[in-house]
Amino acid sequence: MLDKSVPHIPVVMVNYDATNFPEFSLPEGYSFRFYEQGLEEAWCKLQLETGQVASIEVIRERFQSEFGNEKEKLAKCCLFVQTANEEIVGTAMLWNGDTFGELASRIHWVAVLDTHGGKGIAKALLTKILSLNKNDFVYLTTQTGSYQAIYLYQKFGFIKYIGETPLNWKTTNFPEQNEKAWQIIENKISEHKR
Image 1 (cartoon, rainbow, N blue to C red):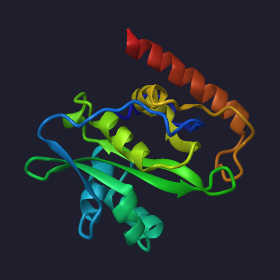
Image 2: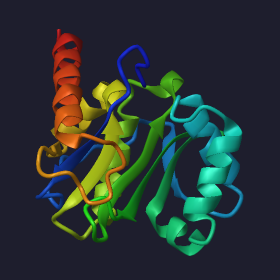
Image 3: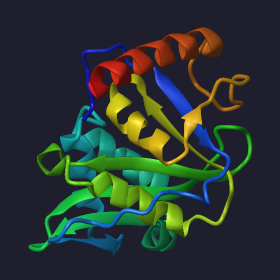
Image 4: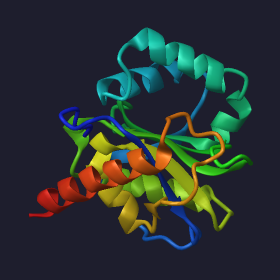
């Protein structure tokens, strides 16, 4: 769940041992399926309904610009979770990103509907996505309002990135913003654990 009551500050998490991770299965009544032609709108609606974007038009444009020419790759790297009646309730991708200036494996666009939260779907998605990965290094980008997801990512070996400003990072004053973001995140995680 995205908490919009905290300031929105993007952060990076890294995992240097991404081939070792906990293994979780989907709960009964759910199954995985890979992207196939026609699931674009379901993916867009999922991103909208989980608060990742402001409008369906914005995410449709983003999907087209980022993935429109990558349908074959999507079929191998974009995973969905569906209910027994084929309702799409979660998604995640293992993609390539260049945040650090060169292509590296990236966990991308993770989303699970709130109505299906708390059932272990995100854990199972991360297990499945990381099983597709063959590299020791994987990173992801997220934001302060996703501290519940960050807590989960930590359980999968991801740690906060606190190094030099990534080459392709779009915010200004990375060190100061990053420090502020992680203070917010760590405080929220501490509250959440209580």
